[in-house]
Length: 129
Length: 163
Image (cartoon, rainbow over all chains, first blue to last red; front, side, top):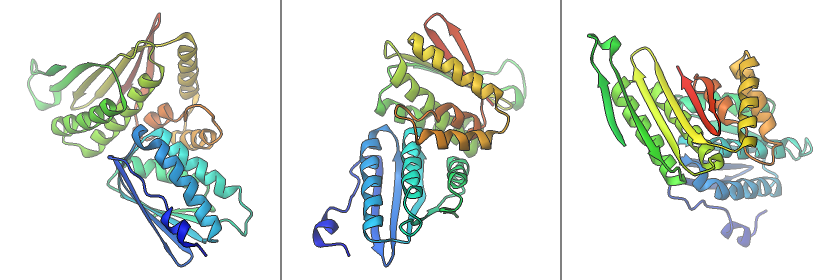
């Protein structure tokens, strides 16, 4: 179980353009991304995803959900970070692996293509709705 | 900034076109601002949120490339919006290695036939890359649905996208 120190260090992104909120629910971590992910937030997003992965593995989570319904834009470099995170999950042993669920906004055209392409990269891990 | 132009020389909405040209020094903030401006401008002219979003993604990716690779930090953005066709051009100076890499990327794109499969392949490749994502052009083609071509004149490179 996570201790108080880990709770207090749970990552929150400080960026004018992008906000990330996360909380643990049973064996699931729920993350909400809002705003625009671009070069300004790149380093913070990279750190966030690294900590998210460590947290999910440490807590033996079965699923991480990312609510992207209010994520209006994501640049290629940020998409690369997400792909690298997915690759890290794929590299885990089957028992340690967790699934990823992406909640999308069908009105955002970039999500229709990119999230489905991400699903193609790891069809056994990722669901999109 | 050159103000938007409207070519009304031929009658009928189908012949109308609007556009602008910007000379900028891309920065992280300027790129985000330009993306928002292109979305707002295109949506006002075309009344098409989907196309406006695709143009916004495209301009962002093109200007980020300029920010990374322009040798003098400057770029010129031209946008032309018509009822049946939209086009965008980003021009900047680049080094020899970057020009070679761009030619190779465009050649690879020209040989690809399936946008979805190409984009998925580019995503898988991106995870292994140390420098850059290599996703920008694939994304413009697959996600934004734009046709790309390059124009090369010495160290001046222009990427033209059309839909």
